[in-house]
Amino acid sequence: MELRDYFDFNSEIDIRIKGHRIAIQHVLNKYREGKGVEELHRRFPTLSMEKIYATILYYLTNKSEVEVYLERERLMDEEAGKLIEAYGRTPTLINWEERLEAARQKLIAEGKYPMMPQPASEDPAV
Image (cartoon, rainbow, N blue to C red; front, side, top):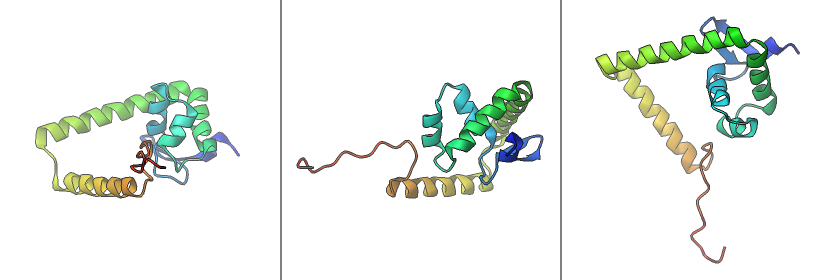
C-alpha cells in the first residue's frame, strides 16, 4: 500500500484520513504539540495505530508541502474566528454546536468520551 493511499485528497485544502472524517491537520497539530502516538490514539480512538503512523510518516516525508497546508488551514481557522467575532454565531453554527455538545454528553454518559478519566468508585469496598 502506498502512503498516499491512506488519505483522501479532496482538495488542496481538504486532506482526510481515508475512511474517516478526520482531517490530517487535527492529528498533525497534536503531534506537533509533542503528543505521542499512544496519546494520539486515545484522542482519536477511531483511527488505527497504522493510520496514525501513516499520517505522521506522510508529514515527515512531505514536510514542506504539509507545512504549507497546515499554515493555510491555520489562516482559514483564524479568518473564520474573525468572522464569528464580527458577525456573531449564525443559527447554523448554534445548531451545530448544540448537536456536537449533545453527542459529547452522550459519549460521556456511556463512558466512551476520549481522554476522560474514569470516575472513582463511590463504594469504599470496591
